[in-house]
Each structure stands twice: as C-alpha cells, then as structure tokens.
Length: 323
Image (cartoon, rainbow, N blue to C red; front, side, top):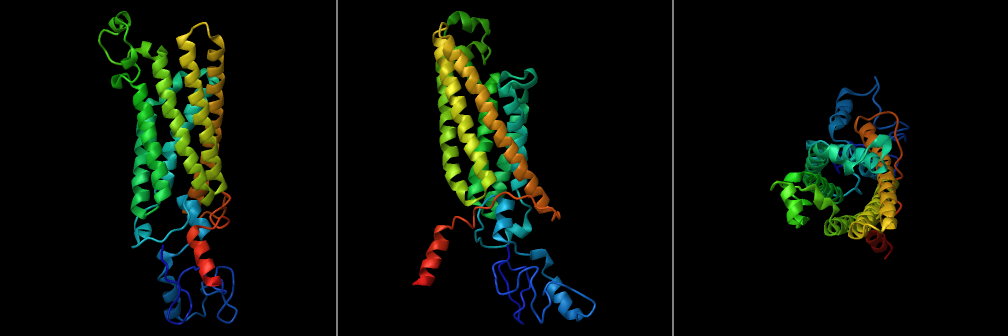
C-alpha cells in the first residue's frame, strides 16, 4: 500500500488513516471542506491532482487486517497494488473442503466415510487453491497468512492422499498373508484401516496439527476475533479427532473393548461439530473480505484485534517517544 501522504501544498493526496490532524475521510479541512470532495467550483488542475491517486489509495489498519488476515506491515515495492488479494482464494479452498467434511464427520443425512467422497475436492480445492493463495501471500509479503495457507494446503493434500488407495497409507499396515492375498497385490488394502498401528499413527498426525493450530491461535490474537475463533475451534477439532483415532486403535486391538469404540464415535462427532464451527466462522470472514474487496456499502465486522493488542514495534516506538 502506498505510504505517501502529503502533496506539495500539504494536502494529502491519498486517504490517510494514520494522520489524525483532520485529514481523514468524513472530516473537514481547507476552510471547512473535505479534501477528497470534488465539486463544480474546483479548479481543473486541482481536481485532477487529487483524482490521479485514486488507484493507489492507502487503507486503514482495520481494513488491511480484514482483507489480508494479518496486521499491517511495511514491504518494499508496490506488489499489493500490482496483484490481486490472494486471501479469499485460499479461503475458498479451505471452506469448500472443510464444510462438507465436517458434515460427513457428524453423519448428517447418512454421510460418512471420513470424507472419501470429497477426495477430489481435497486435492483441487483444499490443496491447490490454498497453495496458490499461500504463494500469493508470500509475494505480497504477508508472512502469517502465507504460513497458515501453506500449512493447510499441504494438510489437504496429505489427507486426500491418505484416502487414495494408490498411496497405500493404510494398506502398508496389512502384514497378514491371508489379508494381503485378498487384495491381490493391489495397494490400499482396506483391512489396514482396522490395524491399531495405522490408527495410532494417524492420530499423532492429527495431534500435531492441533499443536500447530495452537501456535496459530496465539498469533491470531493480533488479527481479529473471527480468526481467533477459527483456530480455537480447529485446535479442539484436531484434538478430538486425534482422541477418536487413539480410541479406535484400542477398539481394534481388543474387539471386546466396546467402550473405546463408543468413545471414538462420540469424539468423531464432536470433532466434526468443532470443524463446523470453524467453517461457519470462515464463511463469515470470507463474506467480509469479498464485500470489502468490491467496496460494498455494507461492512461486516470481524472484531479487529490488531489495534487493541499492540505489536512489539509499536510498544517500542511509544516507549522511545516517552523517553
């Protein structure tokens, strides 16, 4: 975003939200006039001078954080004016993958199968669009959403690959010769899904996804309330699903352990419910970003936290000024 805020006659050429000296939208200056209002009495040269910067309008920290899901940061160049905002593209892939999966996990309308029916969605929406969004965020210099989108893009690719028999994620755990013969040498023997080692191993993957989401949760305290809710519910979802797979391992190890099987079923539903909360919060912030991107007259609040929780650089600047 452009950071030039003053012209030769001390009238800001761009909408300057950081200047609190009467040069913000809706206030008056220049003998009671808003410097961004044009009327028939304006000198043509003066009017053109203010209109020339319409394509490089700077935005408030609140709007920046809403559009990019990251506190405003300074980067060299003008890449944010050259490229489109990659954030909603990545959110599209995330939401169109997680929302159906959460419904599958809760078993709505007879759905199930751990989302196997949406394997293609995981690859071409979840993985592809989120990786593209991550690259876009990297280009424009937004580190936090770049890491988040890249992480979840890889997650959807890994999760989709686990469901594809070709990758033999669960078939590799089948060691019984009789069960191996039943698959006639083809990868992805479904008997592997009932092997305790597979379920425990997959549970550890989900557990550490919860851990990285917890890191994102802490970082989201500098973004907005909706993003915080997204990561809080994801931590709960991954933790519950990890517990479900640990209990499935116990149930498959001892078929008489029916309590473990019942607990696993409840944890899967609970994980799906938390993922559904994530999805609804994601749809809210997606709508907010899309409306802001087209300058829609209705703004949806996301609960900005970037100005409430000051960054280390802001605190250092205030301390330096006080000294």
